[in-house]
Image (tube, rainbow, N blue to C red; front, side, top):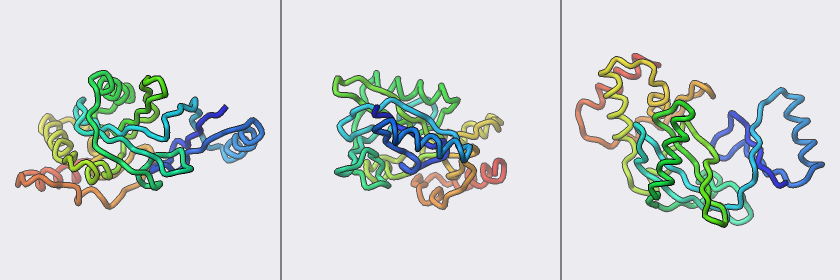
Length: 205
């Protein structure tokens, strides 16, 4: 103790809980067990209320931001009131993020990292369906690399790229829901992209 508990279907900081004492933890686990809900338990890492979100596309880090939780909160998600700023990852941290995504079978992912008080980097989460707050905060276009990745794999006839189409269309095959944010994020002026999006949507969804 303390420890972190995460629902396997949570997003935007929802379903993330800080466990601080044995009695609270026992009650918490009993409630989840009675509902037959699966959770992930993680060691608590004191990251000074900060974490890092890195966007991986085609095995490369295309953007990263540092997030800081609001006072009194352990979750640094922007949707939970956190703030963010653009950062450049070190090569070792880029390698951790890329390898973490690939360990989950993803070439497209939002990978969350955290550094402890000694500067050691931990991967705390890998998201197959990430939000676009990073694009607004950093000013980095993360949509075009994603669309090009989808287009490249479509041309190769690769229909197994569910991770790329999930991120593009806001659809998670694990969680099973759609969002309405995918088209607004497209910033490239390439006239073939709209046709590509339509083809991918018809092919996969």
